[in-house]
Length: 60
Image (cartoon, rainbow, N blue to C red; front, side, top):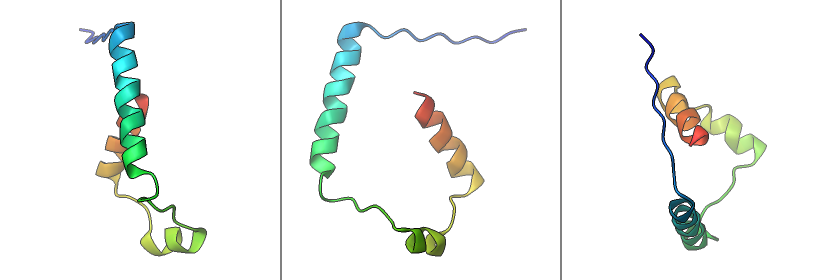
């Protein structure tokens, strides 16, 4: 048996999503800091469960 999930977003909904993302980016502007190479080594990698969540989020 093949399990297929299909999601279709209308252009209006896509526009609303893009607008909300832009609003969130504006709210976080200047509040988030990128780690340098030494800090990334210090804090290490994310665990496998969180890595799976992040990869699934990227696909959306």
